[in-house]
Each structure stands twice: as C-alpha cells, then as structure tokens.
Length: 402
Ligand SMILES: *Cc1c(COP(=O)(O)O)cnc(C)c1O
Image (cartoon, rainbow, N blue to C red; front, side, top):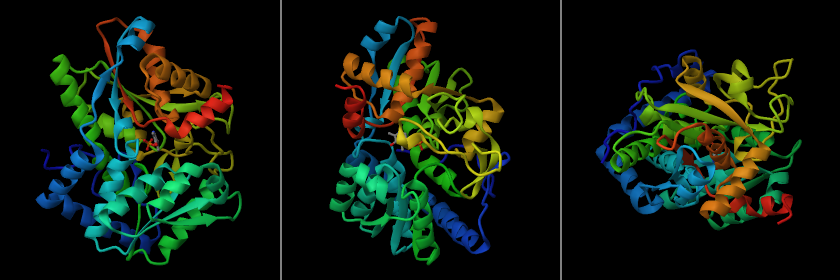
C-alpha cells in the first residue's frame, strides 16, 4: 500500500507550476485556501487517513481498475497494440469518484458543515453526492435550470443520494451561472464550507490535491503494465477537459523518458472555428481564469471565449496549470480530436470490443485509433478510459438515428 498521495515535485509552496497556477483570489479567500492547504498537508501525513482512502479505493470504488488489451480493435487497425485502463468500471462509472472521496474526507477532517459544488452535465454532482453520502456530510449542488431539464438521470440520482440541488435560473441558466451561484453561496461562509472543485483547476491547493487523489490511476497502470508486459507502454494517452484524469494517469510516467505522453483535447467542429471547439492548450494562450494562471481560450477583449465539444465534460475555456507547464516543457504533447472522430471511436469501441465509452474518453480512443496504424505491432498505446458511456447512449443513438 502506498503511504503518500503525492510523488510529483510540483507545485512549489506558492502553488506554482512554473509560471502557472497560484492563487488569484481576494485576501479573505486566500486565507480559506491556505487553511485547506494546511489541513491537506496534515491528513496526507496521517496513516489513518491513508488507510481509510486506500480501503475505500479498494472496497468501495473497486480498485485497482483493470487494464484491458483491446486485441480486436488493435488487429483491425493493423498497427500498435491498444490497451485500456478501465476507469469506466469504477463505482459511479468514471474517475471523478477518486478525488470526490478525497475532498469529502478532507471536508470531514476539517469539520466543515457543508460541501458545495456546481455541476454542468451532472457527472461531478453525482460523484460528489455519492462521496458525501458515504462520508456523511451535507452536500449542496448548484445546477442551471436548462441543464436540469436536459440531464434527467443525473438529476434524479443526486436527489436519491440526498444532496440539496439548487436550480439556478438566472441568465442562460447553464454551467457558468451555476458556478457563479455556487461560489456566492461559498463566499457567505468559507470557513464552514468547502467548495469541492471538480478537476485540477482553480486556486492552489486544488490543482495539486485533485492530482494527488487521481494519481492512483497512473501508479496502478504503470505497475500493471510492467507486470504483464515486462516493459512500459510507448504512448500513454488521456482526454483533457480540466485535466484531472489525464494528470492522474501521467504523473507516474513523468520520469519515464521512453514513454510519450499525449493529452487529447476536443476540437469540436474544428479548431479553425472560434467558439466551436475547446482545444485550450492547442489553440489558447497563457492568461488567467477561475483563480489560476493557465492557458486560456479568450475573445479579442480578453473575456473567456465560448467553447463547444460533443462531450460536455470537456468544454472548458481554461485548463489545469500543471498541463500548461507540461506543454511548455514539451513533456506532454497536446493534440485534438473532432466531434466526428469522437463519435466514430465511440461506435467502433462499442461494436468491436463491447465497451461503450464516455464521449469524453472516446476522444482519447480516437487519438489511439488515428495513431496505431502509423506504428508497429510491437508498440503499445495505453489509453485512459476515464468513464463509461451510459450517460451518452441516448444522445448518440438520437444523433446517429440508431
Ligand atoms: C468530467 C470528465 C472528464 C473531464 O474531466 P478531466 O478533469 O479533464 O478529467 C473526462 N472523462 C469523463 C468520463 C468525465 O466524467
């Protein structure tokens, strides 16, 4: 069993990954962030916390998630071998439960009275409501009225799990308004509440904490792959929205120079169409958003650009600060995949391997499908399959007339 949740040398003690990250927040919030940072440093030192988290990962989430060799898909493509790290098999169906459990345990340790978050499509809301039900702490999720109408199964799950769902009706009543509303509630009492951020974004220490909780993915995968194949994969790929499943996978491989790391961003309807993609690292530039320095997609006037992806978990105009730095360092290559390529990969993996991936994860599969034919049959691509596609099945069936 691992006794520490962090193996990476970043960030520095101000929360910077090179020039990215930090805490771009007003003074009273800086105090709240610093308190979280201190509490986090304390619990990671505690054997009882490490033990509890390890047991929950094993007996509740169902870890370790297996690695599946997609032999039929690899043979059909006629090139490299494709392997899937099955985060889709986790309890609640995706990687998000890994950090939501960590955040819920931290909130309990700090004696917080309530955990608050926003949700767009409802994935973060369901994972957090699940973790809070388990840990026994009140949970309040803010969601746009428009999204509530669209995402019925997730809304129902959150209600069943006992969280308080706040319907946000202002403005466009989608994710942005939900963030504003949740944040306002948090600001009324930051010392009693914890704002549970859903990816490796926001002010320090969230990009570090969420990464540490997710880094179990890569630690397992590296060991599993080594044990089975006696070597490491040539490529490791993962989709990037905010970047939590990708950094969770990459962290264990950062010092393996032979392993090429690839983050796959959503090109939507094409990176040449402003507002119709969310390829932040490929097309954006350094800036600031949501309390951190990072790559950002911006309009000419400096406001965050409109973004789009067929995968609602990937459409974010910012990205994690560590990814921003890893791009500049050249350690990770960031490439992009269109909605069309994503849909094709979604259907192919379903029909060739009997695995329906989340549309987010299908971006990483699409990149592997594009790349495998250019490589030899003795080369290996490990893909992080971040989640399952139950949530997307009806939508895909509708747009493809199935
Ligand atoms: C939320 C989500 C993502 C995107 O978030 P990251 O922080 O970039 O990992 C990817 N895959 C699935 C299945 C998700 O639910």
